[in-house]
Image 1 (cartoon, one colour):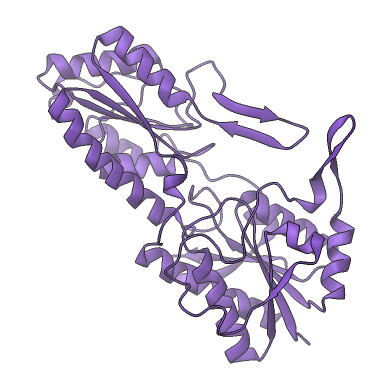
Image 2 (cartoon, helix red, strand yellow):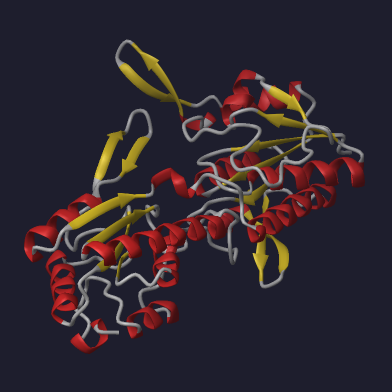
Length: 370
């Protein structure tokens, strides 16, 4: 018999997290009469016993807010918890401690709102006997088994608005503008905002590119009468035969931050074409701010259905969007792979038909004039 549940938000933040929390809490209290606790800062809250009571007053008016009222972290994995010692940082398994703290707090079931990493942790807790359900969260939209994750729509809207603004200044100054967006292993954000913002070149992690061909494309645009270009590059995009560009890497602390590919692309284009080039890195701007109406609705539905999964006893599952329906998916399937852009997909073909360059080939001169 479920009497008390807990909710946590882990990993990178995404617009819509608060709407999920609201959906879980309202359904748990109004429909089932449960108590709800929030774990502050994801796994950190479980380890430090930092639980926040969530009643209807606590979640009033939060659906429109970005971030998360519970806080989050992407470095608090209880199974690989970083501990600093005299010889540096080591990773320690503290998962049993987290499970014991949940039981001590009287938690009967746990709602984990997270991306690929967070849901893998949720699945690992399920193997330890924790009654857990998952909610898919990532602005990258790279989780399999669900048509869309909440946060993605807001992120591409933010990126599209930025591109729209850069187009006007690029045209005025006859420049090439390189826009670096998020996307470590998948190019969904770059692909969608690039098409929506009428970008001229899109560089994705799934399609290794040739810098010379990107520069040749910009040069041909100029020869065809287009004296400005917009190049959108995902942070995980790779030059053919090379690895991703890293800002920071610390394996012991579990840190691997990507960044810098935009600067490399911009410097190469300017050097090889003579076109004045500027680089804009959107970074965490894509994560922040109020969620779009689509993300608010989707996140709310996820929260409501997560509570219903608990009531049905359907644990070790994740709620997922399939068409217009929210359905349960085993966490083992939901965390089995990353959903990436298919280079042969209809959307990529449509982009190529528009004359967009992906850096693997140089579109025809006729297309660059469009």
